[in-house]
Structures are given as C-alpha cells and as structure tokens.
Length: 253
Image (cartoon, rainbow, N blue to C red; front, side, top):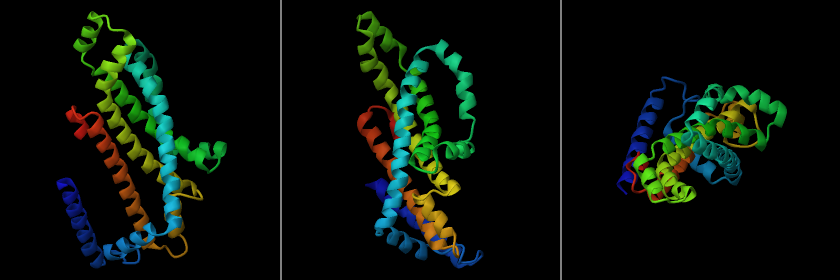
C-alpha cells in the first residue's frame, strides 16, 4: 500500500512540474499541452473502445513476441549455462546478432512479412530474446555448486536435480529477464508501429494524431497510456516474482 501511495505522489509531482513548465509557454502550447489537457484526453481514450482495441493490438503482439523469445531463449540459455564449451562455441554468433539494432531489420521484415502482426511479433521476439537468454545463462551459472554436488552424492537422478535444484535457483534471474524483455518489447513494438506505419496499435494512434494538424494532446495522451501499460506489465512481473521466488532478495529489485 505504501508503494502505491508513493507512486501516486510521484506521478502527481511529475504532472504538476509538467503543468508548470507547459504554462510558462517556453514551447508553443500547441506542441506541448499542459497536463490538465493531456490527462483528461488520456481518460477519454481509455473510455474509447476503438483505442482499447488499438492498445490490445500492441499488447498482443508484445506478449506473443516475448512468448516466442522465451520459447527459444530459455532452453538455449539452460544449455549454454550448463555446458561451457557450447557457450564458447556460440558466443561469437550471439554477440554478433545481439549487436544488430532491432530497428535496423524492420525494412527486411516488412519486405518478407508485410506490415501485420507477424512482422511485429518477429521484431519483438528479436529484441526480447537477449535479456531472456543471458539472464537464463547467468541464472544457471549462479547455481550453488555445493547443492548440485550434494544431489549427486545422494544419487538423485539428473532430471530431478534440474527440476529441484537448477531451475528453482535460476528462476529469479529468468524472471528478471522476462521483466526486461517485456519492457524492451513494448518499446520496440510501439516504435515499429510508428516507423512502419502499421494499421493498428498505439503507434498507429500516435502516427495518425501527428498528421492533419498535429493533435498534440492525443499524441501525449497515447504516450502516457503506453507508459501506464508498461508500468502494469512491470508490476505484474514483479508481483509474480514476489510470489514465485519470495525467498530470493533479487526478485524485489
């Protein structure tokens, strides 16, 4: 409850500061509307079924993309985290791929897949796979070797050792990777919608509002709601971490 109150107070302080800055009219108010204009517009968008549909279009592509990334990254991370030689063999390829900006492959994806859901899911999966992969690897490598050797000394089967020792120990970092993947995926997903000019999603709302006179209130309202969506995704992941790995202090960070 205290965290909620602090969050509300923090949001109120930021909104007030934004309001004061906008009212000074250092920047044209038509380009930078005050918070008292943006927030009511944001509430109006939340009451608009059409905008909720656009928000769901973005959210669904992000969730699908992160799910695809997890399906690839988690098994690979478990293998690379367990076998040093495999990690050394694949590290150059992984480092090369993760150095490629996600935005740079958008033109290729558009040519191959078009501007629809498949393209957005692919670009989200590409940027989300890295935090999931590396946090899974590091989580496996951080497992207490004494616990593994103890399990071996009691002749516990390897599969049970993985299920009872390795995976629970690696889970906190894996959940951290999920949290980072969702945040990165949402950011890149919306950026892709704006850059490509898709026909749905929060980015589409922002892009459309930027044309025909630049409706700044709608642009800032949509950006604000995108931030709220990102906050909710982060909060849900933190809450899941607190329930699943309450014993680990890293899950609260």
